[in-house]
Length: 373
Length: 144
Image 1 (spheres, rainbow over the protein chains, first blue to last red):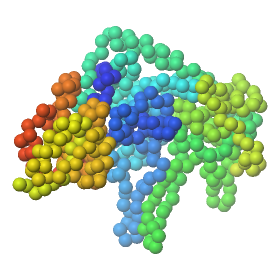
Image 2 (tube, chains in turn red, purple):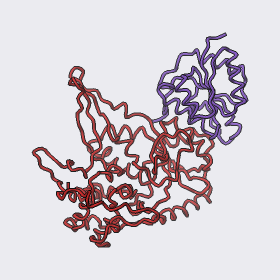
Image 3 (tube, helix red, strand yellow):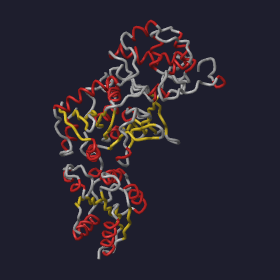
Image 4 (cartoon, chains in turn yellow, cyan):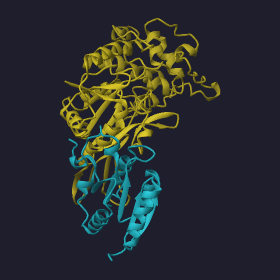
């Protein structure tokens, strides 16, 4: 792997060259959060962001996409070409790159590769960057705070400069096209990189114990914790929609009014939704909220381990930050491990974060019906 | 005198803008002016110019590059010829990235100070030339 460096005050000039490789997307401020979007100016790019509202998954598995059109007279017309739009995602954190690498196992490396996903991955360049973790990040616990693959370039903070890891030939082309903006690092730069590498990992203040978690989940399958969580969970699906590795989708044929032509559309789904496990005949395998939130945890932390050898969680903290009921995944894991009393007040469930207010508890008068739906 | 055209000048230097405007107006063209990239882009959407003369270093030193990207992304403006005029190479010698290397989706790059006669000549050529294929103008021609 080739390693270079670039002064931070040259980054705007470097980024000016990137549109030659595709539409540029970078973290920009949107409301109180950040989103990967097209910056109209370099000053709109905020590389100090904690996390984007939606993960980069939205570029590869869009919230809604038409996969093909159909017409009784002309047959099927694939829409794969639209997925081949070249893009550059600039400023992606390591845990999100890790999340994409996990999605690759499902959509690109499995028995049935998804051509839409694969095409978008092939045509999208990824430029990663260091993150300053906040209280909700626990990526180091999930071994997702650093990545060896899945990026074209990765920028690591050295203070006044970035160390640039070149991960692919496309990344090498970017470096070549940007002329003399990048230079060879010195031994002092490498020493600084190693010093900061240790500090980066230590900067994660929130930690969870991952070892034997799958086994403990097996033991705690009938734990009261899941029932308590079911009482709190609103089944809104926010946690799965902001998750870098959730990929459930629904498929429907939309027929044009007054004709037999139309298109097949797939949209994001969530295992938290009541109808997610409903099948023909009126049966629903996960009728209660408790069963649905339990399923989500088991799929992430246990099912994926059995199938792929590691949990699909990357520790980005998005689910905890976005949950309107204040359910914090790290607290839930600690409770399952018996490190927190499952019957403590909701502050335990929500965790405690410095400088961040805990969302208010759901009002009893707005509580969901007792059937858990 | 050539057929009157609409030309948009985007530059934060009022003297340069006025001088170039006089130059084009003396050729019979109608000139619109904008002080920054955002205003220039919005004005281009409204007046649909036959040519855009675009500075790079305005409030931000890469503002013109980003504005050019927005122009090339916009279906209504994608085919509009753009001449980038800038002293970015003189002011930032570390940026030794030739515009001829294929990364800059402009029709022409002219380093400031510019030769007025060449600007008029190249403008006339671009405003009468057939539009290039959309593929050449789209972002990511090097993407794989």
